[in-house]
Amino acid sequence: MHTFTPDHLIGLISAGYHGLIAYIDKEFKYHFVNEYYQDWFGQNPSELIGKSAMEVIGKEAFAERLPYLERVLRGEKLKFFSYLPHKTLGRREVEQIYHPDIKEDGSIRGFIVMVRDITDQRRAERVAQESEARFRGLTEVMPQIVWITDDEGKAIFFNNNFSRVTNTRMEDNLGNGWVNSVHPEDRVNLILQWGESIKHGSPFEADYRIRMADGSYRWHVARGIPIKNEKGKVERWAGTTTDIEDQKNARVLADKERERIYSLFMQAPVLIAVMNGPDHIFEMINPAGIKNLGGKQVIGLPLKDALPEFIPQGFVKLMDEIYFSGKGMFFPARELHIQNADGTKIETYQDLFYEPIKDENGLTTGILSMAVDVTEQVKALKNMEEALKSRDQFLSIASHELKTPLTSLKLQSQLTLRMLEKNNEIPTERQKLQALQQSDLVTKLTRLIDDMLDVSRIRTGKLNLEKGQHEIGDIVREVVFRMGLLFEAAGIPLPAVKADSKMSGLWDRFRLEQVIGNLLTNAIRYGKGRPIEILIEKKGTMASVSVTDQGYGIDKVDLERIFGRFERASHSAEVSGLGLGLFISKEIIESHHGKIFVTSRLGHGSTFTFEIPINS
Image 1: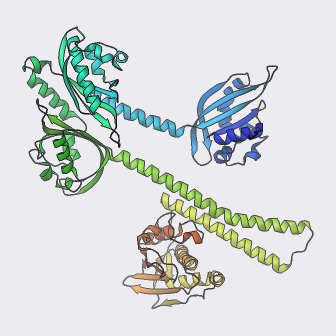
Image 2 (image 1 turned 90 degrees about the vertical axis):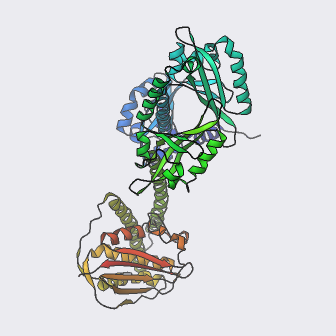
């Protein structure tokens, strides 16, 4: 049997809790913090011991919490919500719990703090609330009673129409309470029909009388369909209950009712359309629907002729399935390609609702289609996911790349200090070597930081060019000369610059040197120590510079990808780098109205070429 010490148990609890845990004394100084303080504030937990809360969380956050701190020191147990700055994520919404540590004599020794980040939870709650509000808003503009039940058929939702027409409270109608509004003579048959549908998971339809607010009864028809999960198990039932008193007794008001529904239909802000027959001929479509479909006039046309671009997308086949099965379908955020009336094509995402229209015999005569354009929401979600992925990728790479030279600098400094402490004389050659090594490490750090700054300038449109008249061969040769030590260290002979003529242009020399240096650095990194070739050619009005190595080469599928942010070659695990060089180079060349590209074959080296305009 394992024996757990109090310290061990505290460690397990603090590590297992997904948030901040700390013990603070009555002087507001930390005596214990868990490892999440490192992630949150960027400080080693051991360094926080003895510090005041104000030093750690900041004056503003401390001032906001001071009333709660004073209350917990009076012995109160507190739970409240506030905001707390995070080192990388910014201002975050948090749930805070303060629990006093009370001595036996009743005095307060200190208190425990537990902080949980609820930003994403609150955001999800708001999204859910907005979705619920949209759903309720849609149901409230419908003339029918709209209802939803659980898998056992017990009501969990009615729109306000049910309470309004029956003069009952919403809570009294949930579960099986709605049955109390059904005429006593209709209850048994209704319950049997409902039970059969639930048992077999089949669509439900039944006529029965409902007691109105004035005590009278009116005939209604209820129709419902099962909503199933991917395994085919029914999770919910959804349906409507429609007043058919006029149809049962007379059809005097039929025309007025039809006009009212048509008016709602035409005013709806989402696509609503009715297609009749097995060919799905458009009988009705509202203005919002015409706009949604690119302005096309589709009335009287079969679906395949009205919207031929829907055929390869599978929608004609889908309508056939709905028509002949008599079962409705719902597709959230379905990708939909539409060709506008003017011939242009657009890509949209839509929530699609399809419901079969049936006659009095239960036979399908058409399909009701509803579509809600959610393109902006889908794009926003994708952009957010891509931004989060890029951020995490950048932080991971940058932290690794910055840490490596910093660690080397630290080790060299420690070694020098130890020798000085022992009064050992450091030979001049050794000092020179250490100075060169440290200078090289600082240069690497500077380059990494410059790359990150350039990415920021590109993203904000602040990458300025200082152009002047320069000759491309001079620029290339100067870069090669400055990189001589790198070629020597890699065991590669200094490449000759082959140029068929002199070409000048109005260019930013520093930025072109940056591009050439990046291409040569990559050739050294991925060239397997083999000779590198540099060729300068005139191609029409463009100066072309090519750097060819005989190294790993690049797979065809990666040729375009490597010019993106944080993208690297397939052998990037063998060499360091942020994956920003080619991205920055591409932006610089395009800012000169040029282009950069690569030709390569896996295992046979690569040729990177850029072309920029010369003087006319």
